[in-house]
Image 1 (cartoon, rainbow, N blue to C red):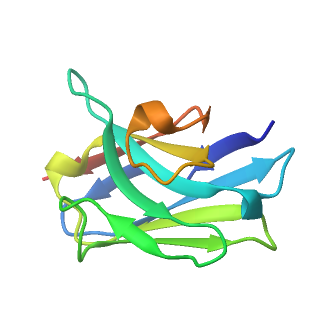
Image 2 (image 1 turned 90 degrees about the vertical axis):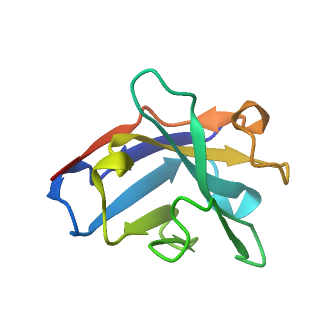
Length: 122
């Protein structure tokens, strides 16, 4: 019911920053817990961050803890991922996802965007 479109990916130098956006349509994101995942070639899709509905409580994978910040602007129907101190191992396709559940497993998420490529050069 909700459609998600990511943007903001691109090429960034190691140590740099990037902000990703996830624009939702069809349903207000206030209904959903929202998350970011990423997938590098040959790797499993990996949880990055989640932000809950109502409370805006945030959860982070260890990989991004202290460097990444997830936020939401329900009035704009948009979720963000601020990424700082990027490293080459952060290179991946980043996906926005929505769910009613409290899980962080990719299989628990019902709605996905098409992804945006983030490439970090050394």
